[in-house]
Image (tube, rainbow, N blue to C red; front, side, top):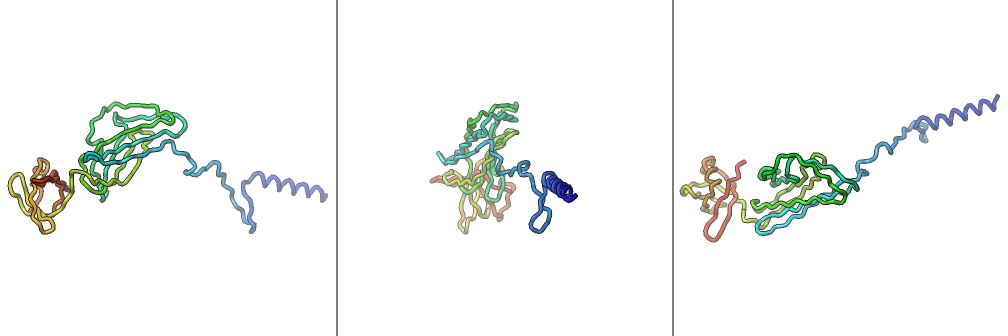
Length: 227
């Protein structure tokens, strides 16, 4: 009789150890064991593509070279909603959108599909010629539905023809020029067509910001920065 009881106790113990997925700690508390094989960490999932951008200033313009490499080890199908494979957005220091490539570039509206082969690179270059000197943030990405491959970087423009200034509008000199008080100095500016169209919305004595160019003869406002 004792031998039979011992065998039953041993059998129940073995079944309990195999079937529950729980164990006890040193305080006889039940501890649940998670199956980590079914829940891999996100960091363990390999990236499919590797994006990168190279930025340089040349001929008074900012050139953005954007590359995306397929590192998944297998082909990837990409579907583009238009003929524009990649796009960019430039933000100023306050986070306001300054410009976006797709707002200015005409492209075909036909949906296009491509097979992005393993180790293949997609390359796109953008030339931005109308940013004024200053600090920005640029975001570059693919327009494909399946993969954006987004890259965000700081962008410092130092060699542009355009500069930004602020001052108080003291008055209009003639239909083509105005006077601005910049830190106590009265400065005359010529107006480009866009600035002329904006001028009626500005009031004398108000603080204004604008983008201008300068040569040995004169300073010219290209446009007013109106929020």
